[in-house]
Image (cartoon, rainbow, N blue to C red):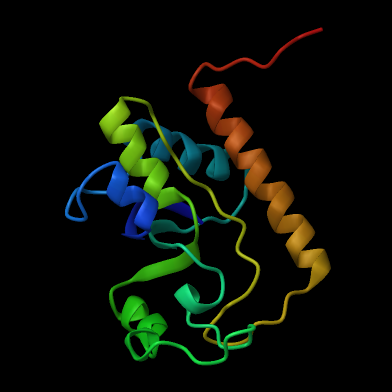
Length: 152
């Protein structure tokens, strides 16, 4: 999953810019990530991510220490699905706003581990491959943008 922008539900981001300020990835970085995935033959979806503060409540999970979700969170995953939001994660929205405000390029590639609306279970082999693929895509994008690693 390559995030072009984020629905930003992160309190830290409010210290960077107002809630209405867009949380968008650098377009050149986003294109580089998509190109790297394509070049590597790694299937990747491009779209908007939901960037939230918490792993359980913020992602409409009730299987945590707090089984009582706030009423405002019930149905949020379905609402996001209808808005064509493709995944949850917890950092990109703030980083995208920081990049725009502070003047650096930001991008996001996520390893998708489960289809949340279907099941929460994670196959460890699938998880490991998804993580490896995400790293390969990120490194490929950096290389295509002209970043070179350290050579010793």
